[in-house]
Image (cartoon, rainbow, N blue to C red; front, side, top):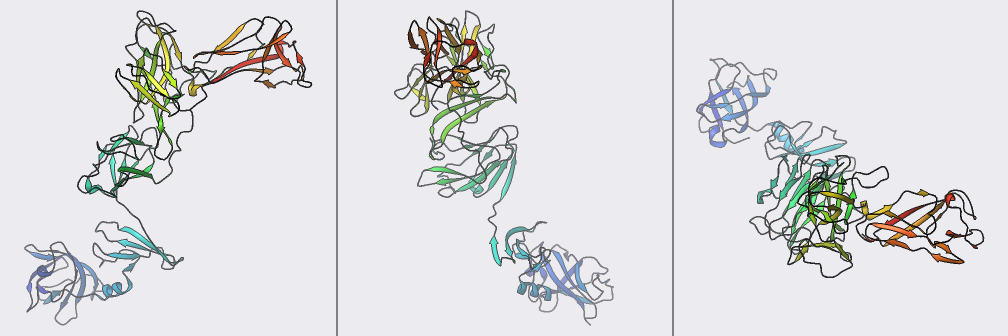
Length: 548
């Protein structure tokens, strides 16, 4: 911006740009000390020094060699001098008192001082010297980058930990070595976006290589982090992807000692799901709260969901152990539209049906599938390898799907059953949401010598099975609303016989004795009575898988 011993003559007339015509005496030309396009501070004066200007301008080396003309001060009350053909004047580079003062004071200004060139810092005190000074970097652009602030009230300087942000838009991003420390925003409003990482040993990567990202929408779609074939994320399997929820700002950094990428979150992250694992979590329901996502019949060997919409979403949670931080390693899959199972096996009765499932992808997509093999739920042991055999080991909270020779870990959730004849679906069972069933209360207790039941449709024998009675009209010391959940008995002659609760993978029931029916003890005395008024009570069933 400044140089020594630079002076040229000019014969420009008027108030426009100066055309430079050569060095004066032993001086140098502007082209010898400045580059084409540089912003130059220069002084113009006639020989008598009665008419002068202090200007800044852009140098064009040309030919012709010119300087644009922005007048900072002049003998013409700050305006450009209208040079005449008779004037003899010179153009030379000279230091400015304003610039020297700025250098001493640290380039203070309410706006960027004109002499601060690209790459220099200046103090923006638009907020007031007594309040704060913003430390800015002149970038050459219309705006200047803030890199810190001096808080005059606290008498402390706070540097900004600024990193470059790049908008990718509605597209995927493949990281390059040059992207180190960058932050990339992706428009995920309509779909998941992928964020593909370099191999950790690629040129320019290695330990501490960090990039950041953000899916701009906090809706149903997110960002799918995809490592190279030989790399894992947070200690997971090589090449296994990790889905980041939308709206969550994240960094991913290569941890060489841990031999894995590590993900950190820089704003609020949805808590790991604490609901029931390995089950259908939600979907369309009846007025009683029961699943309605399966039609009862279909005229072909296929089945299409019903009632699933953007507001009645079908949600399945597949468990696969725990992650490296001890959090549930679940995949939550969501469908906003009806899914379809095709190629169902013909002539499968309700006792030996087609078992319907969904596989949950890393991106949350659900893929329907079916098998004629009943799923196996066991505390532990070797998974079955038969083709289509799903095994879930409760102790390790992992599922496996056999392929005929082995059983790989699988994010599979069983969702229901379909019985078929030779050409179509003749009946279906939709498994209970969250592996839990609570029936509505039925008024009037069952009569003696009857088996009374309800369909819980858990798809597995419940570990918790209850028959509940609730008082409606007070008797035997009980008030309306009092419930009895344990110790039920029925009368047979003069004996009181416990009433067993019977369960299968889809049914819960209770058998009353042959004589006086339901028996309770008097609440105020503890004396057993064989006389209850059936209409003074109502009953319900509860079935729960009891794990997950």
